Length: 288
Image (cartoon, rainbow, N blue to C red; front, side):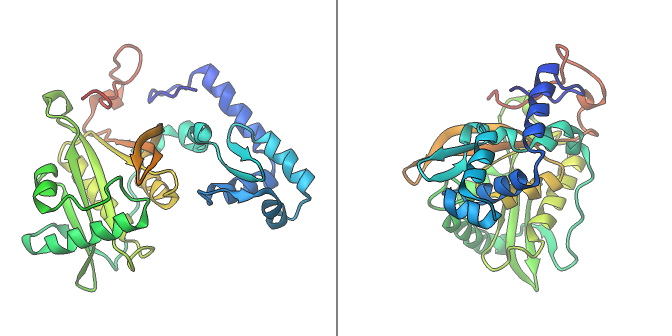
């Protein structure tokens, strides 16, 4: 299936998504999909049937109906990597979500520009992110000099709770070419012990509002599909799912997928106000 950032959805794509919605029109299947998607290593069919309160044969019937979204190997079920792009169905249909106002930050979290004394905390948080196994392809922190050279000077932030730096966000240019001057790759990290307290939401809020004010018309990021909390957080901040990059790179000896998300600024990009290129809005991502 193909998607486009234009106002319309191709009839072929609309029909395909309608078929997915028809398959999902059952509360048991919704629960089943939710349970499996939350287990990167999969779940045994018998265990799945037990949680759902249905017989193994009924569970198998629902699994057959969700073929293409879920993958069954022996007695275990997992999300089919090839079907992950079909999971954010509502995000595709509600593509205007990319232009929503970002969710407001927590009053508990203070976000400010990164300052010289913050670098030790930034590197610490980065190391804590690496330790999760689902935050980055990095296996070692690149170090201050590398990050300082990579990040845009006006788009690097730290978050404080009770006066302690517990997270950071930064944006990097995707290309040195002038035509991509308003396109940036974003990163958001929250330290161990501070997750679930609105730190990531506050950082994203500052990041997207600063991007709008600073003339960045496209923000893009790549997230491991297993990091569902980060994907949901970016959706809430106005990002939309563009697609799944299957087996895009190796991480700790295994091939990993990433979900590609982007946020478009209507204020900074005339194409979002109706200017068209070749019948569709121009999306300045991918070419380097």
